[in-house]
Length: 182
Image (cartoon, rainbow, N blue to C red):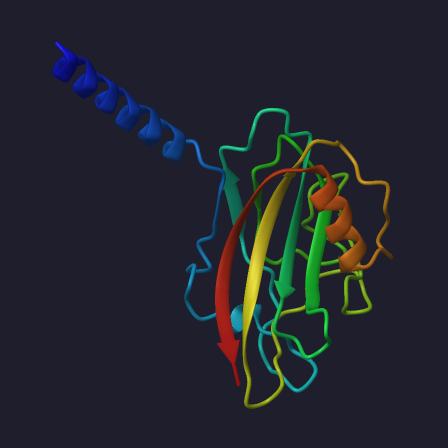
């Protein structure tokens, strides 16, 4: 009898683990492969790089209960700044939005009500990868589910400040990491 109870308990745990794994908050993209090389489409067309500077299409699933908005960012932790480099931050994305189209510009394509910050580029919008020559960097796209409908920030907010605020309100995060070198 004890063996049957033990077997039933193990089976129950396995089912629960499978269900929990299936409900994991995830980020995906038809344009990016986690762990792969960043495509030229997401490389800057400035600072000595000649990419296409196009934000990728992104989608996320299984946001946690209580999510009231999202923030999306592109961060380079390897930038030679002492604090990394925020390439893109888009926040106050409504909770009913679960995808971003590719090619979002400062003028068009962002979900209604969302805000793109200047981050570290000095202007609001996406800035693709452009590491110094001879270096390969990691680029991390992250979506964060937030417990607040709006961050009380505007398009002049720095990536670090937005990162601080999103971490203070984070319910869950999902990321895709890629590498790019030149």
